[in-house]
Image 1 (tube, rainbow, N blue to C red):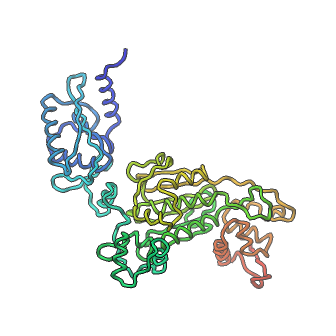
Image 2 (spheres, one colour):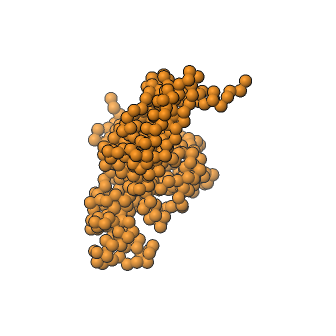
Image 3 (spheres, rainbow, N blue to C red):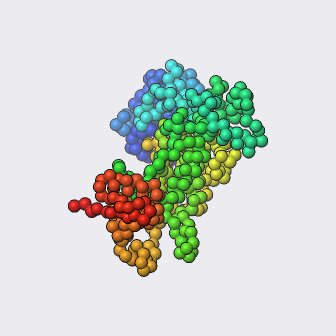
Length: 477
């Protein structure tokens, strides 16, 4: 026998109640205080919306309401939504009749379109799990305005005056993009920067102005850099690394330097070419172009943290502060959907300051060039991670006389970098720093760091001149 519409509605209600309270569901046995209800409505509207089940206890039991209660509470709901919340909310109620004759009111509060919402005392509320809390910091208020597209982080004023501008960089941009000369008069320069949304009404550079055209942005906003590390193996180490560098400067320089770091730490493969032909990168450079631009332009600049770039043996991770904005999901960005978090940055990047191929196309282009990319939207941790998977490389046959055939490089692919260097130099003490870097597929700078460490530990010393000398590797007792 098929269930009636009323029976199905009751089953759905019981199922939702059985799931318990969370950020989208709240239980109330009764409602008599309009101020308390207004704070709940504002919290839901300032978040993702939700439902209040009235006639349900905190433990999930359902005492229900009488008909007289229903009339009173519905009137209270109407008055609260229209008079006690600013701006007024359009809420919906549904009365569900239970088998015992009592009633549960299901109050649905939509996600607000005019955030932020206040109660009548001017307090802004946010959902915090199954509970709610007041907004108590300037940063939270900014984020709420950002979510409602009333404010963007790249508009933030800084304390940098126009004297911090990189004159040559901005001059070249004006000439190449707008065919304009660099203003010689400070007042004209300020007015031009203001018209371009790169300076505030008070004459200070905005965050976008600093990131794009300041001579040393890291002196003004030291947290907005990229921290890059090449780890040995597949796990994060506290102190052991192969290569590391912090990249700062205007966005274009940060992008160029970060891309170079990635490419120098990737393997080069022959891909069917002759042994004397230059190899090609194991992963196309275009993949990292797209993902690094995406990280720099779309990260959340209200989060005071750097972008992190981690390279492991089996993957590369680009970790951006801030989760996906608004209703964006990983599935949506894979399909090419986007949401502009930093419109000023996007508008200038689109003018050629970074490699940019159109809003929403970056992720799709990266996936077209390399399918093995995972995306993780961590809303609780407030970060977004792109993980590019590396393929295991097959070792080529070793020609006679090579390092491999002589047994010198046995175990190079495993163990710490310092130990790998010791094994290599034990077999061929005349090897140079560039030769070590080539065999280990790391930068010469990273080799120099490891060699200096080994020398300070007394495990390695140089005999003879830089040219024509040799290394003496001392094994630990």
